[in-house]
Length: 319
Ligand SMILES: Cc1cc2nc3c(=O)[nH]c(=O)nc-3n(C[C@H](O)[C@H](O)[C@H](O)COP(=O)(O)O)c2cc1C
Image 1 (cartoon, helix red, strand yellow):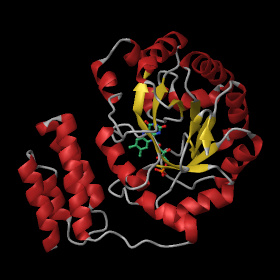
Image 2 (cartoon, protein in one colour; image 1 turned 30 degrees about the vertical axis):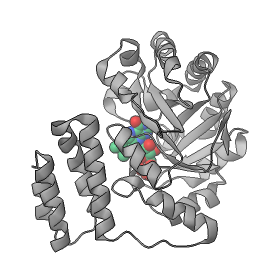
Image 3 (cartoon, protein in one colour; image 1 turned 60 degrees about the vertical axis):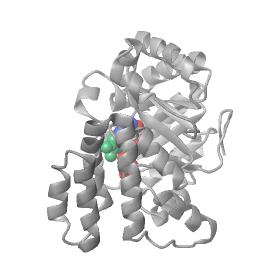
């Protein structure tokens, strides 16, 4: 498996998620079998003006490889500047976001808005390809809405710009994150392109990863919500793809140990206060499907210190 000059050991990828795929989250998922991971989405304009938050999102460390970053934007001038800033970081991949459906992104003509204008998307991608020196990919959706599903056309324009790979979320912008995944459109894109194509959408289990690969013929899968509170999904997918083996779900001890490790790394990275606040939402994801967990979740969401959060975690054993 290769994206341009980047060789990958597997085709299991952690999709970029704003507010989620920070350094602690990436490292945790790598421990359980994720290969390529991405930083959070970074706004080209913010990066070009050295915005502190944008620069912080680029932080990495040894072991956090292979690593891609993802830019979002629409103004050529800022995209150009952002690419220059990225040079010194030596990312393995630079991805461009043409998939984000958030109103504040669309309003600026960015993210999924570019699905409406494949020629403009191509012009932007060309600039990134010509100036980045790293393999370039794009993330698209199947289209703007159900009356304008033109993934193939968008993907062909993108490939024409000289990119090395394409990620496709099998939903339209209008669908947001719900509704059925359109495997047929992903297959159409895969069948039309020469570069590797990675499928995204509802990779919530090893079985659904296999379904994506089987139904679309895509080269790999990008796991997103399926990894929330569930970093083991990568090992589970590997085992299942290898020989149909279903791995045992982690028991409570493994879950609590992983939560502790995640909390510790959130604190080390974001600081004592923010680390705990950021971890709160992960508490909810780690405990998805637990019986009678509601009261503990309420307490987790008001925990302000590491010891407070650890106390709530410890009580998970008593449920
Ligand atoms: C909280 C959240 C944040 C996301 N942020 C980004 C992002 O910054 N860039 C991007 O390309 N996709 C982003 N996505 C989309 C995911 O990468 C993925 O394509 C989408 O969730 C579909 O996969 P899933 O159904 O398996 O979750 C985000 C998704 C979620 C749930």
